[in-house]
Structures are given as C-alpha cells and as structure tokens.
Image (cartoon, rainbow, N blue to C red; front, side, top):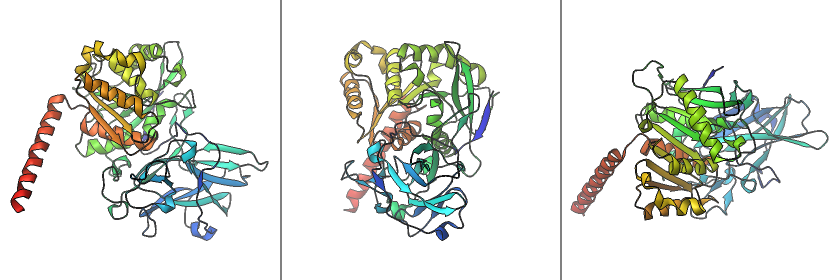
Length: 452
C-alpha cells in the first residue's frame, strides 16, 4: 500500500527530553488579539517582530478539558555566535545575526498559551528564517500532563502503510535580510515549501524485512518523476539518529529534516539534478550494524530498485545520516565504499579501533565524502577525529562545521550543503569549481589592487 502526500508537512523531535521548563515567554495577550486567526499556525510579516516575522499558534484542545496548554520546541531559542551555546536567548530577545539551536531539555522553550474560548489556546513567537518542529503540552484537570502532542490542524506525516506517525508539527519562517542580517547560515529559505507547484512527492511504504516483519520506508520522488524514464534516477539512502521511538523513524528526515522542501528548492533552482531519496528506520535494530547492513543490501535496496526507477549502479548511489545515523554512514563508508559513490557523515563518527584501523581501508579514496558537525554539538570530538584521520591518510574529503548543536537546525543545513556542493558532483567537477573560484578571487584581488 502506498500513499502520496504533498510536501511541506513535517514532523518531529528526535532528541527532545521533556523535563522542567527551562525558558518561557513573558508576553501576555488577550483573546481579542487572536480573533482573526484560524486553528493551526499562521506566519506573518510584522515590523514589530525582532525577526520581521511572527508565528501565531492557535491550538484546538480536542479533549475539551485542558486546564493549561503550553507550546514548546527545543530549537526556538537563539544564540549569538560570539557568545556561544552557554548564552541562549528567548525568541522575544532575538538580535540580528543570531542563529537557532538547541536539541535538549536545557534548551527547550515553553510558552503558556492564552485561553481564548471554545477550547482554543493561542500565542505568538518571533522566529528567524528556517524550518522548526513544535509540539504542545496540556495540563489535565487532575494535574497530570500530556506532552508530545502535535498540532491537530497542522498534523505530522503518517506512514499509512504502517499506521505510524511522526512526532511534531512544523512551522516555516521566511527570510528578512533587514531584520536577520546577511551573514553565512542566516538565510534558510531553502528549507521552506515551494509555492509554484514545482514540488515532488513523498511516498510512505512498507516492505518485508529480514525477520519477515513489516517495516516502513519514506521515498521522496522529485518533481516530474517519470517511472518510465530511460535513464534511471540516482538515489540517496538516509538514516536518522537515536530516537525515543522504535518505529516511525523513516519519517524523521522527510519531516523535521525538511529533506523534501530542501531537495525541491535545489532541484528547481538548478543546483542539483532530480534524484530519489529513501529514508529508513534503524532504531529497532538497536544499532546492530550487522542487522542494519543485512536490511540495507538484502531488503531495502532490492525493494526500492524493484518498485522505483532508480539506478542499480554504485556510482549513482549515496548514503548519509545524522548522529547514530552518522555512525552508521561511517561504517557503510569503511566497509562498503564500493557500493556507494557519495557519503554524508554528520554529527557522529566511529571511534576507537574502527578509527585506528583506517589505514587498512585503501579503497576509501574513491567515494566523495562530506563530514559535518555543529560547533556546539556534544559529539563534535569523534567527527573532528575522523576528519583528522582522513587528512592523515591523504583521503580527500569535505569538512563542514557550522553554528549549531545536536539538533535539526544543524542537520537541515548539512543536508542542504551536501546536496548543493557535493552530491552527484565527482571530484573533477569539484576541482573545476574550486579552480574557477580561485581564479575569480585572484581577479577580484587584482582589480581591487589596481583601484587602490
């Protein structure tokens, strides 16, 4: 059974932990401020916002009994790059040049919503450019709480073949150069849904795994996908990270990772060719690499190659992942470098003996590799160690470090950079691009010198 869904719907917090409230909005409003808003989320340009935009959330309490409703997200807080991760700012205190980050209980922002009647609760938040997951927590009449609720009027993606849903709803904020600044990483328009119809689709499917169990996949098909195209599409396989849920993780990249939106934009803008993305669930394997490997090569790839018009050639295949998915990708790279031509290893990497044995992997020079991590990621050391080990062995690769933590704000950007600058671009293409940039820099420097 397959279902095709329109893009721009998303998703969930993989690394959220819900404890005590760490940050909260001090703003108060009245019911009349929200009289013209429908249930769900509305994003509006507003000069009164420190970012230039407000997201207004109206939560519809389907229980009709909530004593209190809170909006929350672990990536609504913003950070000054110079001050670092130890100095978070609530959205209302945003200043030009700040970046969103978070990823844990200590960086989770809560806002208590106003009861505006008819079982509706509302509040608004200024946010900078990009894609943000969000959830709600309600306090029940007996004082207990129910958390990880998505927005019933902006629901998460569901794999209808398995009946399992993602965890969070998504809100998308446009970019304002005047309010947000023009530094690197600030314009995240690439994460927003397109509105011109040049969008692909995500199919949620089920396949039979090694143990005869039913397992979920999510498959992104680019705009204009032709199942009968003479030239098969190239294909990227992607693994999520550690999650609190055994099932449904095939939805994470497609939703909170904004993979569908990012790919739509880069394809439509001519930054990459149309390609297929496949995301799977590895969580219930408890990160047993032998099982993940068997599932990948004996079940996932045969299923995808039989049901979609994708290439069977290694040169047209790629593998990428975040956190434990980064570890999985690293192991795929070390042990199956001849099965994939491109690898994206993000936010975690192999350690210990696996890393020290790198000199035995002479075949690692053939694929194109991008290693990436957030500057504030608590797992940055293993990633940097891999980067240094590859350098020591003279293995050409890209290393990207950006102002983010162990969170979706990091992984969305890493995916976008991977697709735009590395994926489906062989080493000759990248060398030519680098040479052209070097010549351009020299020309500009010479022209500047002549003016001086």
